[in-house]
Amino acid sequence: MTESAAPAPATPPGDPIIVHADADGGRPVAEFVLGHGADPVRELARLGWSRPRLRGAERVADGSLVLTYAVAPASAVTSVANPVPTDPGLVLEPGEEARPYQRTAAYGVVTSDRGVLLTELSALTSAPGRWTLPGGGLDPGEAPVAALHREVWEESGQEVEAVRLLEAHTSHWIGRAPSGRLEDFHAVRIVYAASCPQPTDPVVHDVGGSTEAVRWVRRDELDHYHLSRSFAPHMRRWLAS
Image (cartoon, rainbow, N blue to C red; front, side, top):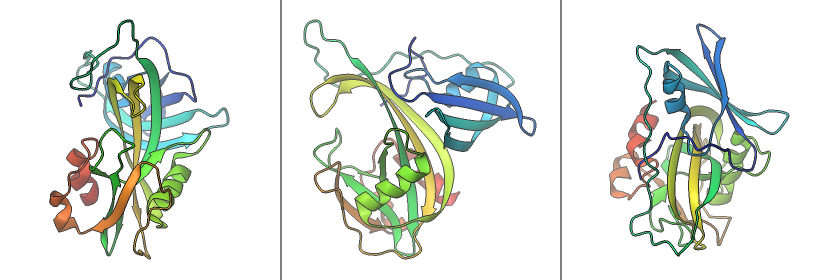
């Protein structure tokens, strides 16, 4: 699914996401609320900033989630407005309108001496049978790192440490939720690296949810798994970082 950088005029209900950028050793240069459908990196490029590096993803006292980037001046300002993609074969009912929905989630590239931890999506998701990273949506007011620990335990029974922030990715599309509801969906995914010093045989504790199965996968076997489109292009780079 193609990502879109075209911001909508309003932010969806819920805790806002604030993008903050520093340059030149900590000098604040930009701060804005991430609009529905917008991507932080593309919005920073539109404002004239390049080489963004995500340095923090923290809850603050008012419940907002602050994404802090280190940036450098761009040689040219970019402004790209793409149409919002739709799910293939999407059929709309007369008068039907998509409901804006933003989901912020935390995921982990979890490694151990047994390999990389992968989870299989269940039939309750829009991509059953695909494999992805352990993780999921933040509860209201929950810090991303706390969500990562909780989700990894619920989906695999593993405990992680040495958690390190990697990147944030977004996707924006119009499609149907598994319930059939038409949604203007904005996914914000905060990705971490983490290690599991005492890996065990993984087990799904959150039975009946979005995770069908979980397993440790050797790095040389990753190509045999049908990884989700959200993470497949980045997996090798994340594992090498």
